[in-house]
Length: 333
Image (cartoon, rainbow, N blue to C red; front, side):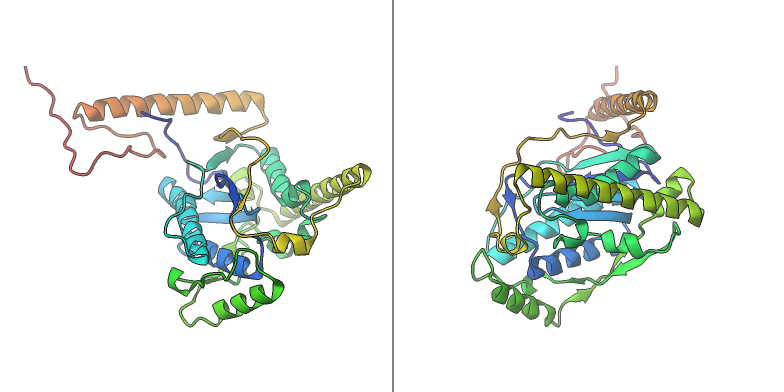
């Protein structure tokens, strides 16, 4: 097999991080945000995952979600990437575009502490990148407001208004860097479309806590306040570090005037991981589970090529075979 199989479990927390190859495709203009929200709403229209938290950073995004099934989890991120690529092509009048890295990071988040740390991290991402001093000031799409105002209940929902625009309804931009006037005009043209389809984004900010057995409102509220406190502490530390270094955040108007598909090379290439676990003992146990699963997949693949009927491990994907391919029958002595 050319690469290790992926194994996704039901009712498990995952952090999903797709990354572009070498560009900042869509700056957080009103036009971009309208399109991005619509893409997310359309993708999530059939509840592929239980969406809890998200922050879009232009060249990558962070999503924390609870999986419903192996198949729908993969469909979620694949459809999100495909629709984003189609939208960028329409905006720029491109016939083809290779936008994304090979595969997104889809990492299981193993413990409550790990989940809290990751949620704090994603909401601090804009501040860490010096795009703003606090998540409230960040113009890109995110679920912070939903997280703050949601009732402390694992089943509580917040609906974010979103409209999906078919590719034919997305206008080609007059230039790659929009002025505020151009952005407002194109946004108005978009929202006036009669072919736009309403797809509210349903966010369940506390659904992930159910995985760890935290369901009481008092417990949920304590976790929320812990996350808020840690986000504020990190933002304040970032602001103090910038002040000490004589630096400042990127001005909002500069951020919005950045060109579409601006070339961008990350400072470092991050390793693709499939597990986030701070508990060493548990981490070794889970890594061993993954290794056993991947070994079973390799054995299944070997047997399948020999024409044998095999049952793949739960949560994994069968490899692709050419259309019309017929497995060779075992040689009969």
